[in-house]
Image 1 (tube, rainbow, N blue to C red):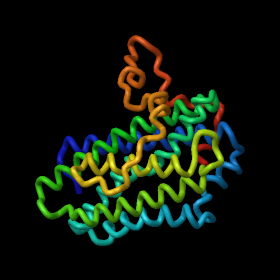
Image 2: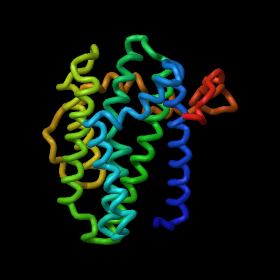
Image 3: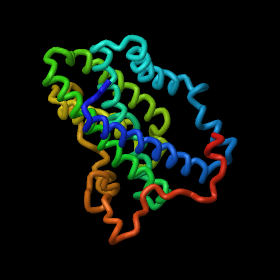
Length: 244
């Protein structure tokens, strides 16, 4: 549905990145668990009502567009992508950065750091698409619809992250999860020139973001002619990923 050559190229790059992310998550899982345990975890959404509802909300938006490809449904899809790339998962990213700050699961955090770096770039893709669609088609992007989607996504991110992480991990709490999600949502709204509708909260994970360096070009971009890149290291001993 998007035919501008430069945007098509960027979206193709995103598809490539997502395939690598899938392999990277698989590397982490297979490093920690047996094949049977990994399969159980991968399909946990089937037996977890909270996770099922969270997935269903976002999946239904794509299904509606697939069944009825209207301009309105297209806008919902690009806003859903913006939320997926810019809001969902981010408390999970901070979980790994928090562990790394304590010297735990350093190899896994390296994988997560590169994944988050890519997600920020993907978020920028859809920020620019939304802003361009609004500029070229006045009235097509309905603010109330965008706000409603943000409210739902924020609610799910907080509920899910508090259920999974909550007050059970040193350095993270229900309160820090809520504060961070509000902070991030307001930031994403500002980037698409919309009012910041959530209560203003400070970023409780600023120290972790500095450690992760996800937006630091000097630590995350390597000149492969001068250094050995360690991005997305694969565990050569793993077998059976294709079977999963």
